[in-house]
Length: 241
Ligand code: UDP
View 1 (cartoon, rainbow, N blue to C red):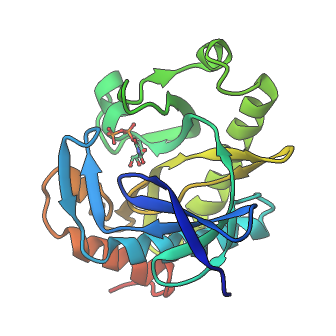
View 2 (view 1 turned 180 degrees about the horizontal axis):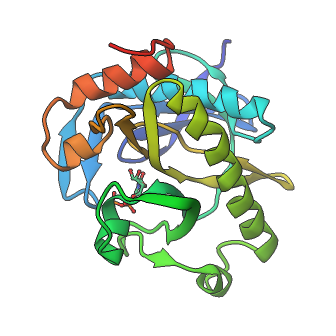
């Protein structure tokens, strides 16, 4: 695929978005930069951009087969993905299969407690406010999306989880939770952003070892090794080290 990279449209914590000669397409460039706790903690995870780009591509392709519309149009290089240009909805949709992170804090349930029926949570995508949790009424009040869009996003989030969870389990990974972002293009909605160890919690299915960004957030060490292990299993399809 040959697409020309034009002006930088946006630079975030982990990615840069560039315009292309196609009005309906952008390039997502994946960096090695990592931040946590609303950018209070900063660092570099060597090779992360490649892992996140390749892993996202693999999973977007898997989701397309399950009739999930995604913004993925193709892989341009190790760190560049061609994507449909979306108007991103300012909601982070989180699906959870196992208690971890903020859900453990909010409920007092122990991290690792299985959740019988996957749950969906909504957060307002706002750095200034630190991504507060919101509900359907707040979405309506803030005009972040229509009730129909929200219903579609929740249904799609559960379908995505229903595809990714067994797919990752076959590769020895427990999908604990996952953050999804959706956007509009024309009259349709699409899954956007990325699906990676930055945006999902992934635990080794046998040992429970954390193989995601929590290793960076919580200073557990072995951060690069964890990302490479996920790459081996998800992108190369190797079951074990
Ligand atoms: N997450 C994310 N970006 C955010 C917040 C959360 O990708 O800004 C992901 C996080 O990696 C985890 C899931 O969403 O996989 C649930 O995160 P949680 O609410 O437990 O928040 P945290 O403990 O990370 O503050």
